[in-house]
Amino acid sequence: MEERLQKLLSAAGICSRRAAEGYITEGRVTVNGEVAALGRRADPKRDEILVDGKPLSPKAEHVYLLLNKPRGYVTTLSDEKGRSTVADLVKDCGVRVYPVGRLDMDSEGLLLLTNDGDLMQHLLHPSGEIHKTYHVTVFGEVRGCAERLSHVTDLDGDPISPAQVKVLGQAGQTAELEITIHEGKNRQIRRMCAACQLGVKRLRRVREHTLTLGDLQPGAWRYLADREVDALRNS
Image (cartoon, rainbow, N blue to C red; front, side, top):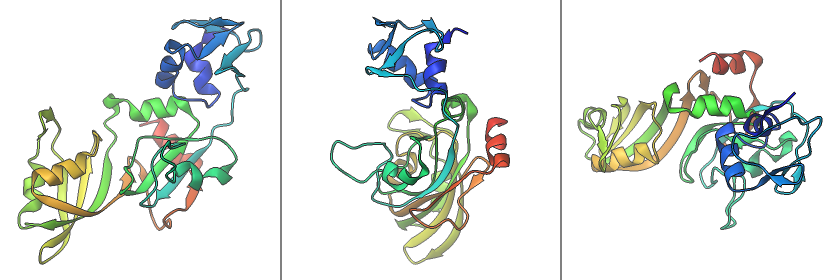
């Protein structure tokens, strides 16, 4: 049966449908020896589909991992600077999986990885408004910092929705905060703290939608239970 190439690449675990559009427009996908155009349909049982010159693999079994990302790892599958990547931490899972969203190199905590391109697209789409909760240790003028952070609605001209912020602990010029956001703009929490004249000592994601980090050790990962996958799909 013919289907759009974006769907076929996603089902094979190569990338999300949105990323597949980029592969196609960049000329990286061919069908029966011809460079494919966006919107092209094909039948993997009948047509020869190549991505970067390599045959499209049969539909991969979907795998879902929850990783406790440590500091010092970049959220990518390979790095041109030779830095350690999250792919190094999950290589023993036996299949190629992709991170859903990002944590910067100095941040840590919950990171979902999967080869299910449709679920990736669902979770990353802005309309989903997936809530993410972080425990953040800040320093500086911490008196009233939770209220100040919850009123940040603009980052360098980029409007953001207010965050939910509460104080978990405070001592002197240091405080531990719980911050919940749902937009996930680039380095959003660090930029929010900088706007409030706060430095960040530690930033750790502890919850994303229905998933929680729990007592998983830094650098360790586990498979998601079926009920956890179902909850993500039905969000």
